[in-house]
Length: 276
Ligand code: AMP
Ligand code: FE
Ligand code: FE
Ligand code: ZN
Picture 1 (cartoon, rainbow, N blue to C red):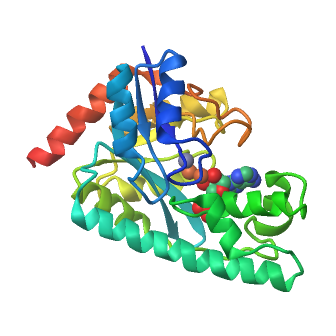
Picture 2 (picture 1 turned 90 degrees about the vertical axis):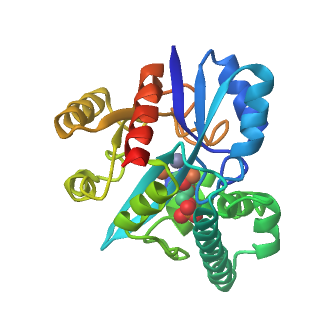
């Protein structure tokens, strides 16, 4: 039986509610899912409740962005205590950083003559963790670009005129925050971010896995990371990075799924480090 360990919901930049995502995961025939929204755990409880109602296992998760020099990486945290005070405070600070940065990006776009407003962007993001996909949606809605992809390509992608970086943790901090909340840290989509060089540095910090299977990885790359994980004593995980229909090609629920045994291993690793 297969599981999906990487999905987003309206709690961050996904376009479907935690309940809807859980329902779709069950309908895709999967056995478990982790909700891994950016900088928030607010989707976890509603997803767990929905999962309970329909008999699908839902485990807590989060995705944190981190920066070392020019290198941006994403770290997934699994099975963390989603009520951990310190963790919730840190995530709150990261979300405030997102908000301030979004204000600046909107201001920049307005100076460039694009009719977007922060109110509209926040209306699109709802209560969730605000991100560039919400801004991209506002730009599409205003008729300034045709697709969200165009918004990233022309205006808000890294290096584009309205791009402003957001505050990010260091990779070591991201790993530690997850560990302190009892979670298991895994390096997300290492192929997408060209993050191989970070792996050796993060193992002593407590990194436990590599997301070998991800829609952005070719089959060859996935098996390369699978072998690398084995060699380094790490767990090879996988997930779809689903953000809703039509968000990114190939990122459909159940894409890059992994067997249930990967979740069993995650649970074992969690117990092991909480016993230490
Ligand atoms: P942010 O966290 O605000 O910097 O925005 C990053 C998010 O934007 C990622 O998590 C993806 O969901 C999304 N994203 C990045 N690049 C693209 C792209 N080219 N097209 C659509 N969405 C993208
Ligand atoms: Fe995202
Ligand atoms: Fe990511
Ligand atoms: Zn993601």
